[in-house]
Structures are given as C-alpha cells and as structure tokens.
Image 1: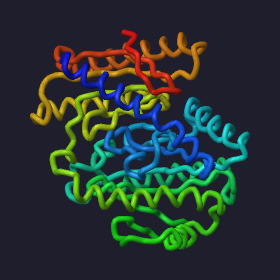
Image 2: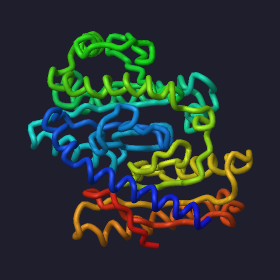
Image 3: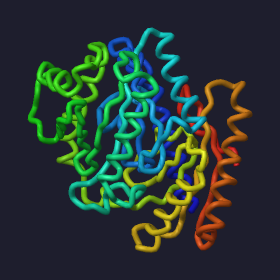
Length: 340
C-alpha cells in the first residue's frame, strides 16, 4: 500500500513540475486563443482532454461527475460554472462548453461504467445537459456556446455532434489543413461566433494529431477498467494515468451516489483480479491563495470522512484493504500537500 501512495505523490510532483514549466506556454496560448474553454466529463480517469486535444495543461477547465451527469440546478455547480463564465466576460472573452460522453468501439465493457455501458443513454443525458445550458444562457447566445462531443477512448477520438444533426468522427478524417477544419466547424455549428471558431480549431486539430499517435502507442491492457484510486473533490488534473482513478467531483447534491458507484466499480476490479488488494481513497480540495487554505483543508477532511462512511456502509469488506488521504492542491502550481 505504501508503494501505491508513494506512486501518487510522485505522479503529482511530476505533473506540478510540468504544469509550472508550461506557464509561459499557457500565457501565450491564451493570448492567441482567449476563449474560456470548459469541459463537463465523466469521472473516468482516461478522459484526459489536455492529452486528447494536445493543449497545454490548465487551458481546459474540467467539471467531473459519474458518467458525465450534470444539472445546473445543483447549487454548487450552478455557482461554479456561472463564476467561470463571469470571469471570462470580465476579460472580454466568450466561453466554449464541451459537453462530453465517452464509449469504446472495441468492447462495450470499456465504455462508461457510470451509465452501465449504455452509450445511447449517456448520449441522451449529455444532450439534455447541453440543451439546459442553452435554455439558461440563451438559445442564440454569442457568449456561452455549448457543443456535444463524444470521446471514443480506444482511439482518443472526438465525435463532433453538429447543431444540424450531422456527426463528424475525427478518426475518419485524413490529415487536414486548418482551413478544412474551419469549414467543418462552420458546417456543424453555423451560429458559433468566429472568435470561438478560431479557438475551437486548435482543439480539434490537436485531436487529429493525437489520434495518429494513439494508434501507434495505445495497448489493449491500457484500455480496460482497472482503477484502484477513488478520487473525490477538486484538483485532480494530474491524476490521468490510464485506468488508475475514478474521479468524483463535489457538485452533485446527492454526492453519496457517485461515490458509491465509483467504489463499486473499484471493488469489481479487485474481485475480477484486474487489480491487487490496495485501494486508495484520495479526497482533495483546491485553493487559490493562503487565505483560502484553512477552509480548503476542512473541505478535504470532510470529503475523506464522507467517502469512508459511504464505503463502510455499502462495501464494508473494502475497508480492510483501503487507505485514505485528505490533500489540498495549490491551483497556481498544482502541487499536492497531504493533510491527513
């Protein structure tokens, strides 16, 4: 168990070093592409959009929950997302919202366990959430623009769902010029503001490059569910080694359900022999400056205790081979500090 905890600490250290080293790259990217990019996605740790889109760390702001299920009626999510939009508006920027679902073409059991591997239900849920964003921020708005995107995890391919019903699977495209990709964006999203079009371009162009690299590198063993970390809270951009973690965001008012579901997936991984005994519960909270740190620490400790209680109630047999930690993460450096 100690080796697994040390592995997590080392992964965070390496990510933090990379994140800090990319500061100027992030600043340059944002100067060229000022659109605020937000992604709603599943807790599955394979869904690592900076890699899938080949964008610098910290450009795409993630919201995570089981299966990518979200509702802007949830108070914390409503406030957090609205703050992201408001901060962008103050800078004179629009917001592109990537509303995502994921699946595997190769094996249904590599698809979204949060939806019991039902891709069509996952797609309906995310489409409904996209429509909710449109209702709240305006159907024809030019400030907040949500798009529905599938992620095919075998190839790391984006599936673009156009507003006119057309669907483009990026894995079916050959090498294409930026002009050709812009034509596709215009065809799929005719009402998308031109500034967002130009800032969506490097995301899909990066994905086209990533698909080619994934075909060469991704192995079958990396694709099947084998998670052994239950991560609860915020600040997990560093935790994206394939099939290591199930990541539960803090937004669902009934957060016990996604924690229970994630723990059940990890338990089934152990029972099937995909992982050895040794499960880590990692509760994390993100802070921006020293003044917020004390409150952040209390949130992390609370999430740790809540997760332990839910697992003890629903899967008591897991407690004997489980270790849990509460950590805080500095948003400026993404460095993790173990609190408890």
